Length: 486
RNA sequence: GCUCCCAUCGUCUAGUGGCCUAGGACACCACCCUCUCAAGGUGGCGGCACGGGUUCGAAUCCCGUUGGGAGUGCCA
Image 1 (cartoon, rainbow, N blue to C red):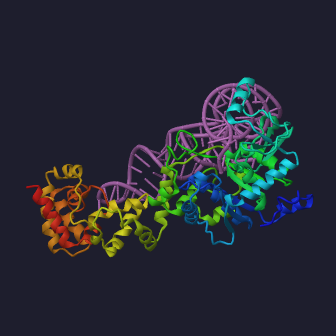
Image 2 (image 1 turned 90 degrees about the vertical axis):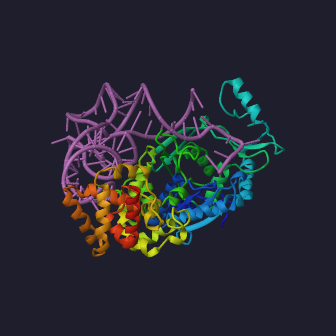
Image 3 (image 1 turned 45 degrees about the horizontal axis):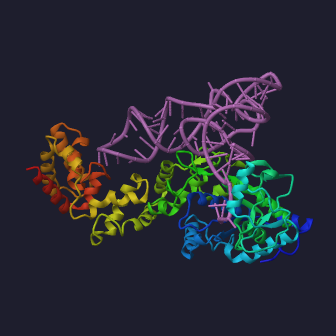
């Protein structure tokens, strides 16, 4: 790492050159134990941009808060990014860096600001600040220690001396945003214990890592003038800012882990395909050209532009995600589908592990591929193939077996299936014969058979299912159901 | 409260002054297909928050109102 930061407050030509090199984007999550879908979208935006500009995606773990630090959480972030297609082995990828590793650098920068008169020490406690605010009727810190000339000491915080004037943030998605500096309080750079605050650490790291483009969620917009002031105070031209709208729930509140399902890992565990998640996330706040939103990543990389990102918050709609996923599941080749299903057929499944037969599943797979929203729906759709006895749904039973032809259709199938040619066609012919002889509809007569064999009224096509199940087992199930009818 | 952001069908969006009688997708409804359920096909429902301007002309530009949201820590 170079130390462009601490030494020289870059000359004009240096500043210019920073922005002429290939852009450097960054994604700077704090490790919190799970990966937020909002973070996923931000990461994807940065990744797409880095790819299309020939730039770099820098991953920095913002772990300066002790309570948010755990090595396995960092691994979780890297795994989640990899799942999204953001591979740490890519030449476009850099990091992970750890903010905590730069703590000394942050302090040096803060002290330099103090030496230059751009920051000052303050000994007021949070309570004292509150009291003063209450008395004066104004909010926040009032700059009490600005000219007291205090030095460092136990419990003394270092505050940034916000200059007079106005700070203009040029934002690629927001446009020009103006902040009057007198609405920005002298914020803390160094805590009473000497440790650096996020705002400082973030800026120092960005400078240190030669970040040229900061693309992050809108919630950081109010921080931006402070950070820009810091960039300038440290002698550098600020990066190109872009604040994308936040993701919200149905109440239009920012997605929070408390009330909303936000963990990427959870969607993954439910069998949302990575491609579907990526595609869906990219359509929140942005849309590809044309009349379909289902587009390959390569097209997204070609077309995505921050200037086209919507300005208002987007509702993270699980239903639409699921629809996207259904599309992606159906796009899979049979072999790909079987492969994708694999993790969902072991472990917590409704059948005993030793009864599972991969080849049986393989032949049933095409029948269920169009029938699931997420991969986790698969077991419930094929459980009858691997259970010793089908799990009979009571409602399905009472509804279908109460018909006056239920016993007869079971008898007819029992009889006909014994000698028919074994295949969906032959099996269907048996039921057809009975159905016609009674002047009924196939839709009616198949129901008792389906319940007897699979336990449910809905499921994959019956005749193919029976074919896969096998003659002997089918006959056994039909007989079992028939005997229950007395 | 203060600072900032935002405002097109229920939702995600297209739209950058005339191609808009506002397009697509999800959801929903109907029909077709059909052994159930899906998938697929066809059609339907449904929107420029409101009020002023500017303009020959406004969803598109300006102002205001209203309504949402974010931030407001010695968290990140």
